Amino acid sequence: MAVVKHETREIRSAEDIVLVRQAVRAWAIELGFRLVDQTKLVTAASELARNIVDYGGGGTVVIEALNDAERRGLRLRFEDHGPGIEDVDTALRDGYTTGGGLGLGLGGARRLVNEFEIVSAPGRGTRVTITRWR
Amino acid sequence: MPTDPWLAHIVSKFESEILADWIQHQLAADTLRRDLMSEAELVEQSRAFLGLLREAVQKGNLADTTGPEWTPVREMLACVSRARAKQGFTASETATFVFSLKQPLFARLRGEVGTDVDALGDAVWRTTVLLDKLGLYTAESYQKGREEVIARQQQEMMELSTPVVKLWEGILALPLIGTLDSARTQIVMENLLERIVETGASIAIIDITGVPTVDTLVAQHLLKTVAAARLMGADCIISGIRPQIAQTIVHLGVELTNVITKATLADAFTVALERTGATIAPRSGHV
Amino acid sequence: MFESGSSVERIPILKMGSYLLVTIQVDMHDRLATSLQDDLTARIVETRARGVLIDISSLEVVDSFIGRMLGNIAAMARVLDAETVVVGMRPAVAITLVELGLSLPGVRTALNVDKGMELLRGSVERVAKVNSRGRRQARDA
Image 1 (cartoon, rainbow over the protein chains, first blue to last red):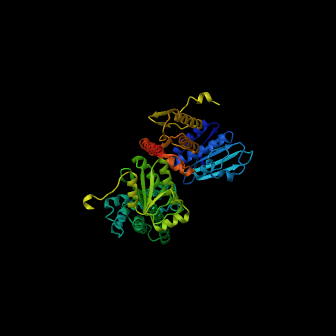
Image 2 (image 1 turned 180 degrees about the vertical axis):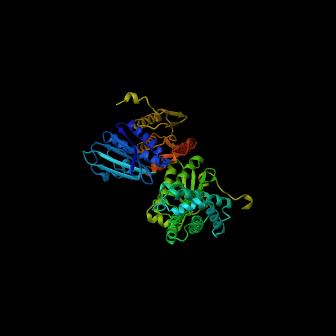
Image 3 (image 1 turned 90 degrees about the horizontal axis):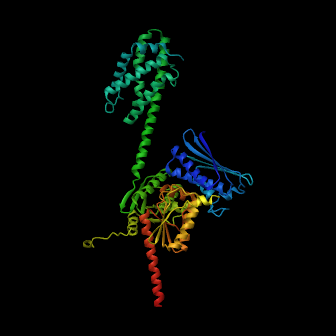
């Protein structure tokens, strides 16, 4: 699997969430994703970017275009150095929230992509990597 | 292994004679398909192939037909084989194109090499190995051609077998036929939702009378479609659920409480008409 | 923050008879969505609107935040005695919301503005009828 192209973006404010959505949309179109798949990816990106703004104290997203032997994909790596998540399993459960929302962010984002990986520890920040294949 | 001097010699010296013999063989063979291909076409393909073969044999390594000097030969064979696969030739009929060249070549080798049995044996062996390789390559290309035909037909069938039809003003129906896999269901459902927007239909009937079985994923896709349609402002009715499918749905624990289900498409249509404010009544004279 | 700058940016709310009409045409950032929620509730009270129609046919993405906002608006409007109808959700958006696990309970939907208005009129008239019958019964009793 090879990374064909990549881009890093800062996520600090609500405006950045919009910019991340637009960037992911542009990449998904360029890679030839179908409309429904584009929408799923952009929505997942929006959820994760908002987590960074609301809970992570800002961070970054790395957008990577992947090329496998027979397929193409888009990988997004969201990273912050915020307080981290104590119990990842609980955080992934629908309805779990610390911020007064619906708590669909992490679990919902996971359902919208093909691969989902989360690494987090209290005080060490959070890294969520999602991939969707075309 | 280097090129074979004898083979290179005869294809240069007797190209037109070999071509004539070869065409004669092909025209006389049982595998000839005059219904699928004209004589002129056969002559043209044979001439082109023999020309490319001569060039490759002169400079190329006979033992390795994957090398760059064999590229034109391989491309030509791939092209011919795929075309024949689409035209309806069988695999043997297609491979015979290459194998039928053996006899004319062997005859010329015998004539040229003369009485040196060892040299003749070597030359014939190398030639037969070469043509076997090219023949197998032809068969593989033919196979690929067939696969392309099958893939295209599958695509066409998918489009054919899932038409979204308008039953009445504001009522669409999607009669599903055949086995549903997850990928197909997804495409079909997206298509239905698009048509709902285009037509402004407020009710869609998904009829699964023609669907033999439903697995968990497909059942979930159906339900997700119903939920998505509702978010868009349209209702779905699922009709034609067979007894086995009803059992599957219950065993899978799939929640159907919020979905309108009807035994037949006709029942579903009646409900849909009521919802849109229309009714079907017998004409007064016929009561 | 940028209070003075962002307060200029608002989503317009149109009044049509006793209904309010909102067409969301931009990819909203979260503060804009929140201010729409505030503005709408204020306008419902101010205009005594009986219904709210939100057209989201231009929206290419509805994430859980926007989805929650739509649900909140419908719930708040109901408390203020107004019906809410969300119209024009795109198929790709609907499929994504379902996958996300958001079914917008309590939000009524319609395919387009025309059908949304029909739905609003129908339900407002029904409510009016029930109310007047209730009053009559109370008087007769």
